[in-house]
Length: 170
Image 1 (spheres, rainbow, N blue to C red):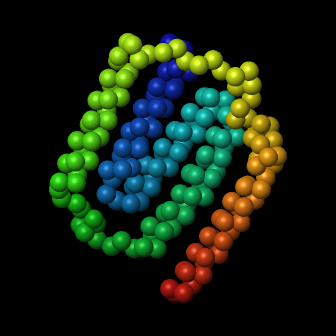
Image 2 (image 1 turned 120 degrees about the vertical axis):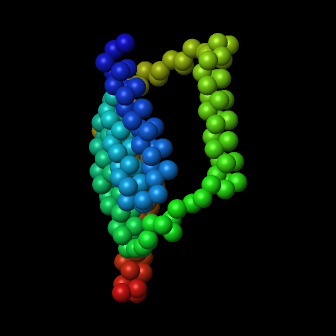
């Protein structure tokens, strides 16, 4: 096994563990921290794929800006006593665990069945350039310029709305 495969397996395992810990964590701040760790694992996986711009954007946008916003919202909500957040085992939780176990069994069956293992599709000739800064820049500021600008206006409107709502409560 090459070092890339070993590194991929380690990063994938850490990403899965942090995603599970984020979901099962009762403390919202700890859940947000596990989500940040998951974002960093995904950024490292992007680097392994040769998508440098996506890795940097993952860290800057998601782990930086979005998670700071999420942590601020958690702090502004002031959830109070953590004992109120504790859930008891109920029928919904048991059904969810049973469904998750069923999906894992199906994935294991698909992975282990020899008749379903097909050869991977051949990569396109420009596969090495996908995800690089040049190709993403050409896409964002070429055919996708209008959706890119509309998204920035929507984010600006959301920020202005959040500031207005926060000022009304103070």
